[in-house]
Image (spheres, rainbow, N blue to C red):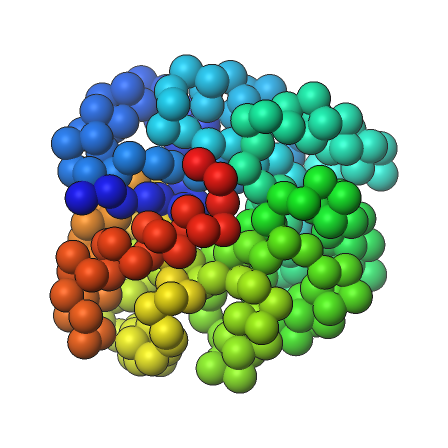
Length: 255
Ligand SMILES: [Zn+2]
């Protein structure tokens, strides 16, 4: 079995002591590729060097909307330069997007930052990894103005109608540990209904713990548990879901 964790922050220092062991257990579990999105400029160098140590780790660079205070206007130029410099290893621009769930969020500043990064994705023909909360309609309208080579809506939890808009723009949806929580009824029914051809698996480790593990560090080793839950919710078998979600990811992202 070849599984992919399409969204995992394995570069974070919380994994420094046992990253190699985690990767070795991932290999045993069939998790053969992990996509590592960035959050701020200060983390890029470290992320790239962690990814350079293993063929299964694939880096993305970008400026995350949850860290607006840390981003400076010149970071956009920095991103352009870094993307050019690391073009051979980068698999996407991310994670980027709009987060209107945050208290005191500045819609205008987030939209400018997001748009500038979409232009970089457009110029480099790289797909994008999206972080979106309470802003799917605004995100779709930005994507229509600045079309990119598709991408993944990480931890998607919008409506079927919003999903439809994203799909028309070439986007896939990241399914993570949130579906393992029995009370996540709406999300579970959404993930049962979306076409399998639009789904990819993700953990968002160390965040978004699976059911019964709240308060602990999440790990890419939980991908098989997410897969098993998805198979319970859907009509396809776990084997089919593993195969198709991996193919979906590979179709979009050069791993
Ligand atoms: Zn993330």
